Length: 272
Image (cartoon, rainbow, N blue to C red):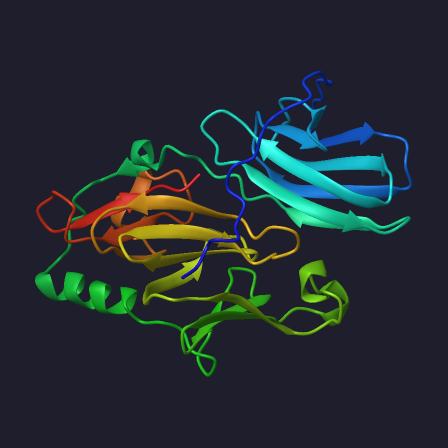
């Protein structure tokens, strides 16, 4: 796995912006193109070319309108968030959509029910075996909405669009449109693979001593963020049945790691 070309450190500059409320925030800048940002975390600040465009956004969709054609840097950052950044080139009168992956940096605070209770030893063994099952092209993993398929082909993570061709995400057309993309050629063994929560544009994978989130969209910068660091973790997104009302997320991760200092090696990560 090689993240050498991934941009993880972004300098924040150019303070001075506007306070925008509401689920959809509009910022008029004066050009002819438009940027739509999806999944913006609550309270995050949106920067365009190192200047504040939206301060303390509400969670959801932010629309930046009136941007000049050409190259621009985008940044979404906030307290206790991994920054999400991209350098993009926009065409005249283009509307470009991006799914933001600015996840929390404090996943340790999100763990609940550190020792899930199983009915018997066989149940925990079956769960560990399921965590190690990697999807293949013949038997891929589908996203919650059924529109994206995910699998491993050798040492490479791949994805394909299963929705209507007219709704194909823009990052499947760079520049020629295709129904299948390479997400990550990995240099190390990937032990678990899944989608992040209910999203179809962000995946989770376990490699070495960590669990990472990685966006499918490789335009500009392909952002990745660590969610968990342990010994040799594997995971499943089907953790809700083991934490019941203790989990707020619909897709909590149940993690098995020999380095977890609990009785059975399992913990649950209640993803935001």
